Image (cartoon, rainbow, N blue to C red):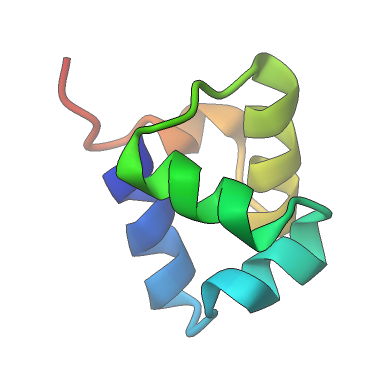
Length: 65
């Protein structure tokens, strides 16, 4: 999931700081999500999906098991 978040962020030309500002997360949390060091709650997924203006289900596209 972390690589998917990073890919979406980079596709939109956002830095971790910019994504943090838009989503309300701390920059360190964004980095931890992207590195897979922090588990994401359903609420976190929903907030990121809203920030990226996509459906939560779309966050899982291309994510391997």
